Image (cartoon, rainbow, N blue to C red; front, side, top):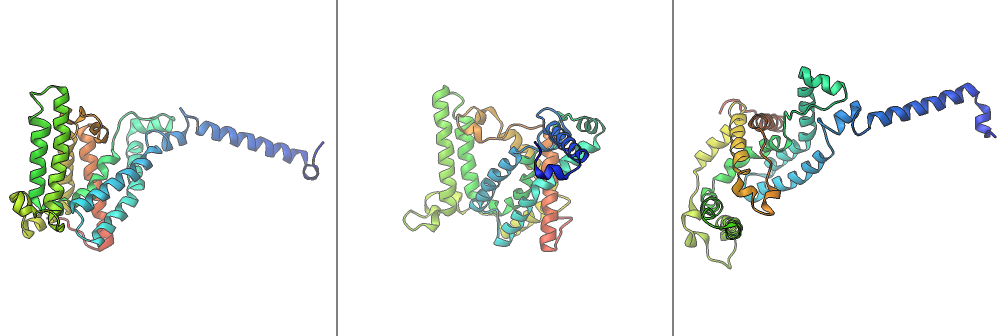
Length: 294
C-alpha cells in the first residue's frame, strides 16, 4: 500500500531516488571506513586526526599560561598577536602537511590510493614552539632566577641521583623539581609580597642578575628577524628535543607523562623553523612591520 505522496510520483522517479540514496550511503560508508577511503586518509590518519584539536587546545592553555608567568610577553598587544597566530596555526599546519605529502611523488601515490604515508614530515608540537619561543628573550632578561632554577635542576636531576639507588634517586629528582620551581617563583616575584623577605636579601644574585635592556633588545631583534629567527628557534628546538627526552627525566614517574617524545632532528628543525616563519608573517600582517635581517 503506497502513501498519497508516493502515488503522485512516477514509479521511475521513486526507483531513481532510492538508488541514489543507496549509492550515496554506500559511498559515505566507504569513504569513512576505518582503514580506507580518501576522506579517511585526509581527515583521520596521516594528514589530520581529531587528537590534533585536543593537543592544540591543551597545549595552547599551557603555553600561554607559561608565557605570562615567565614574562615572555611584553604587552597585551604582543599577547594578542600570539593569540591570532595560535588560532591560525592548525589550518596552516594542515595545509603545509597536505602540501608536503602531495608534493612528494611516493607519498602522493599512497594518499591517492587511500593509504597513509608512514613518514612524519612535520610535528605540530614543534611547529607551535615558533610562536612563543620568539618571546623568550623578554623572559631571560631576569637572568638570575633562570640560572638559579637550572643549577638546582642540573644538580638534582643529573648529578646527585647518580650514586643513589632507584627510590632515593627518584625522591631527589622530585625534590629538585619542587625546589627549583619554588626558587624561580620566589626570586622573580617574591618582592611583590610584603609578608616574606625580599629575594635580593636572601638569594642575592639569583634575584638581582639581569641582562641589560640593550642586550635584551638585540636578542629580541635577532629571534624575531626572518633571516635569523627560524634558525635560532630551530636550534633551541633541537636542544630541548634531546634534553627533555633524556633517561634522567623520562624515568621519573608522573613527570614522564608531561614530556615530549624524542622526534627525529630533521622533523624538529623543519617544524620549528617553519612555525617561526609563520609567526613572523602573522606578526608582520598584524603590526605592519617585518624585520628581515637582525
